[in-house]
Image (cartoon, rainbow, N blue to C red; front, top):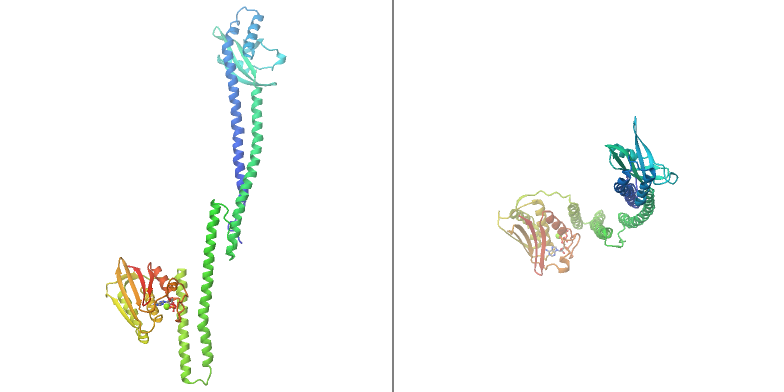
Length: 472
Ligand SMILES: Nc1ncnc2c1ncn2[C@@H]1O[C@H](COP(=O)(O)OP(=O)(O)OP(=O)(O)O)[C@@H](O)[C@H]1O
Ligand SMILES: [Mg+2]
């Protein structure tokens, strides 16, 4: 079975779904890791800096008052220590010394001992001196990140000192690092679950699709027997229902096709065998002229039967394949029925039958293919003659009603039995012993439908009417 699609890369449905789910999971965790976690860190640090800044505003005034005064260093240290105790921060007081290149900071008092805390470079303090406002920031030291807020002490319009409040931010950094780690672990697990889950779901779907594919392959190979089990009401279940329906229809069409070919070849074989037999008989030189003439008459009959059969089969196959071309034109149907009825005069005389034509000349007009309408009328009159006893009466009428034209052929024969009535339009169906091949009405009704019309029958003992209805 050739595959219909040959793309450059062939990924199975399950692989594609698994990749898609994994990509979505991966993206969700990447956003968490790269956007949410850093955001969290910034927010937490921001809170810490805001707290330091508020500490600086509340406690700096008492320390600031010592700058430029004659207070002993121990008293300054006490105030620094008190502020540190109250806030829980490390508090450092730095003096601003003016040097030619700008200003320099020198430490005057520090709440913690140097050995137990990180050595700070006080960049935030310098920034506060430069701007003259309370400034916050972080600094990386050997002992981790430190958050700082610096409060400049202004004396006579110039920053004379700066008080730096600092606190280790490594707690925040560590917490965020832990969160990041957890995100990575959770992401890994989710990715694995997405991969396995999507693969399993997709594999189940793919198996159901595969079943449909196998069934389609079987049908393509001519096996119409096995229906696909319908295991759910979802889209694939509905596809299976539609597929089974198609399979049934194909099976019906296939059996109709086989029956058609079998019947057609049987119908063709009978006259051909009969012809073969007569030709053999005619080879006999001792045949008397009467018998020879009788045999030749039979040969003529069989040849005529073969001719009609081959023409009918060709018509029917063209009609069924839709390749029969119609040439519609404005037609006077009263004239048409008159001329077709006229063709039957010799046969009517032979049958001792009578044909009555009830049409109003020039009043019944329709747009149709005259050749094909004549063919239908011929088939109907032929049936009214062949399938009724001799001496019967046939009436042909043509009239217009409700935007339609109705051509009717009625006979007073024995009628058609009701079980046969539903089948007479089938190809090769014959309901009596008359030697027909059963194609006439099949062709007539197909032709009527092709002309957007309809052929119907109404039969009871003593009266059978076939009516051809065409749009006017
Ligand atoms: N006017 C009728 N009266 C009684 N039976 C009819 C009449 N017309 C058709 N039938 C029945 O319908 C069957 C089908 O008719 P149809 O014209 O299709 O085939 P046919 O006449 O047997 O063969 P063909 O027309 O191909 O030579 C006939 O065999 C006959 O039994
Ligand atoms: Mg017929």
